[in-house]
Length: 512
Image (tube, rainbow, N blue to C red):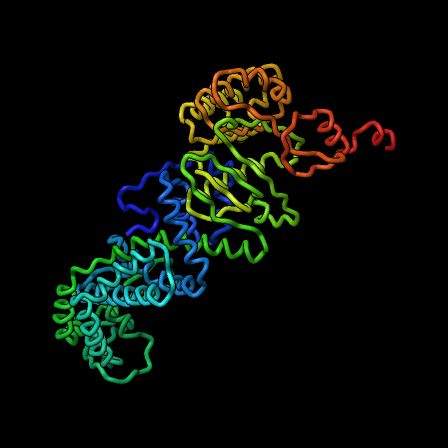
């Protein structure tokens, strides 16, 4: 059972490119959600896949709302997820805790896995029954578990396991006689007797039965303990009766399928991590909201902020509004250095990704359909441009972006063509915007080329319904407000702002 898609086996999604993951800082968000390396990998695998169907987004929202609104439910599932992970470990088939050097060890291991499966099914079913849940996903899991728990086969396996464990537990310890060589090596085991009390020993019955390995303090490798190896035949003889009974038990219940549980694992990791993130944001008085998913409507976001500001412990966080529409899809973004342009772009990208994933968003409100794909062009390490040069690298990436874009794509550009001359950059930028207008894509073009905004009347005369809009990061009294507004760029105020910041105005230089 898959908790990530409403219709199992019919999942439709697009995969975020690695460049986008880096440029919008999605990897930083994943690191903020969990510190566990294995969980980070699971989250990345899930969070780079953007569901295409609104029904899947809403399906996930409902599950996350159940967990976020019920702390007891979250904590119960968090405890249950550990044994589910154990079942995933054994279910892989390639992993085993110990070498399978005898069939008894193998059967005892299978017995333990069967016991974990039974206990986990019961625990999860009980949890979903006693808590108030409303999501289709969790209700479906509860109904599937109910069918298992009420089956005659399941009802019979628990007492069978309990009886064998009681029989095995009757042997509390073993007394042995060991013959040693003159070098104090073990020559043979001359006697063995199991007793119903616990002798003082450094070995447990569990270690003996499985053939435990211990570390040699003088070498960095593991070796088979010769004493345990010598005891194995005696152990098998003593447990001969149980050997056959365990084998019959395993064969009798061989049809149990742990995949119902193991298929839930990755989804549960995602939902619990997302729920924890929401609770952390709420505890710090940061606003979050579940988006209203409306197919056919472009995103309209009110009072949003980039979650990176929270992650970096920014005290004063400025919120902005942003929206796309059929007649407004392309925005030319200008403003001073360190005025918040990149943070704004990343924030919009992250809001769309989180909405697609069925998560809450960092905004007062959000409605519309998240973008089916997000493509980015941010500055990259100069060392990566060795084959083409910076402009050549930009050309290669931009060509691929245009090829893969359509009306459901968001393209984020950050200082594109900044390494060429102003005249060339203006020419290249206009051509790029022209083709993206033809394709009907949504664009935020963050640029230092202020002349580009002056060409908007000319560009709006091109074919296509969408108008091109100039927006700027506001400066008030020569101070960055980090607020977005519709306006033509004010190049003189930007220059004055930068000059005053670094103390190079005429007045400042004269004073020094």
